[in-house]
Amino acid sequence: MAINPNTTFTAGSVLTAAQQNRFPFGIVAQATSNTDYTLTTSYAIATGMSVTFTAIANRYYKITYMEPQCQTANTTNADTNIQIRVTNAAGTLLNTGFIRAEVASQDTGTLTLVSISTFTAGSVTIVGVAKTSSTSSAPVLGRNAAVAGPALLLVEDIGPA
Image (cartoon, rainbow, N blue to C red; front, side):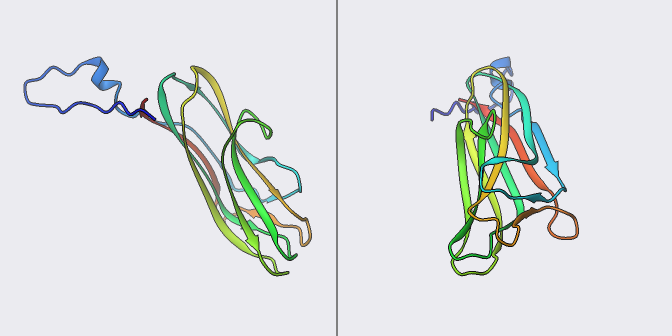
């Protein structure tokens, strides 16, 4: 990954458009969901975890996907996986994470994924997907205010490539 940092500014220098464009542009897309999502054994877009933005070529984007409460099934070696993907649940994989229950007991934890990516110019859709290895005990992604708070999918422009 090539990095194109800004220059050092000195008193009396002229600030150029090229220098201004080296600054991060900040948040370009955000989604939150307070709705619990019941997991299945196939990857599917988790409720509310889809954003679309217009990418600019040759810029880095930081993508954060956070699920505040991921439950596993109550079977030995049960796991719950979340992923960041491009376009849809079968699209390009950007990052993946999981929580595993080693014994036959439902386990719960928070998962946060971060990915740094570049895209070609134009419309880009980012999705957060999830699945479980077993539906025993009906594992969910808990997001309601009484339990854990909202899930988050965030895309930030962090500067030029």
